[in-house]
Each structure stands twice: as C-alpha cells, then as structure tokens.
Image (cartoon, rainbow, N blue to C red):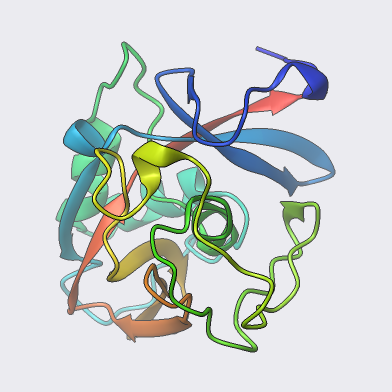
Length: 198
C-alpha cells in the first residue's frame, strides 16, 4: 500500500489499525509509523532470556527484522508481538530505536523537561536533533497525554535494537532518556507497524 505524504492525518489520529505517530526514513524510503492501541498492543517483559548476541537485531530504523531476530533467539516478548492481530492486521512489531524515539518526540505524555543530549534521530522526518529543555513539550494528541486512554506510561520502553550482547536500547517516556538496559531486565513495549508512503 502507498499513501501520499499530504494525505496523512494529524499526529495521534486513528489510522490504519492504530494511531498515526509520524514518518521514518529507512533505505531511502519514507514510511508512516502507526502505534498500536494500548489495550491490545502494549505489554511488558524481558528482551531475551540470555546475553547471547542476537544477530539481525541491530537496525535503528526497522523494528520488524529486529523483532523477528529476537523471537528466533527465544524472546517471549517478541513472540507475543509477532502473534498479535490488531485491527485485522498481523504486521505489528517492537519498534527499532529511532521508531521508538519518534513515538516519544510526537506522543510525549508528560510536561517534564526532556533530557538534554538525548533524542538524536537521523531516521525521522524531519531529522530529530537532541532535545533541549525548551524545545520539547507534551503532545497535542489528547488521548496520548498523561492519563489519556492511549498514553504511553512515563517509564522505560524497549526498542528492538540490540546495543550489545547483554543490552538493548530503551527510551524513557517521562524525560526522554535514551540508554540501554540489560536484556534480562523487565520493561514495557508498545507495538507499531508501518507502510510505505510517497
């Protein structure tokens, strides 16, 4: 499916089985990122049960391949993600690091100041530069604001991007910190899907 960029809805609007979260560029193609509804597309768990290298889970901009690699490595969280059928669609996955940052940048639930020097996102459209405490504000999408039905919790969320043998990238949805957590730690995840746009 292909959609023209000017036909995309407002950030946070219901769209394509979930809610429109923004645009990511991957392999010179632009993709609309859709975040899943909270009730059916959010869970928590460990990234993988072991600290072995998860080959194929290093993309910063495409979480589907990462999530499949995680599932193959024994991740119950990734297996859960790939088994979900939401809005009659079955292509949901754990977002890659830059896809997850796009969710924070556009759907930030809180009014807290964003952590300076985090937030670089060369894959987002437009390109995301590190946060400063004046540039980042709470999302205008009411359902995604703190206390809203679709709001991301103000905690750490997993990306599907491996950082090292024992760690994977995470994003904090309170103040925007980007760091890695041990793969055996527990954190939240919110599923996304995407499709190519012109």
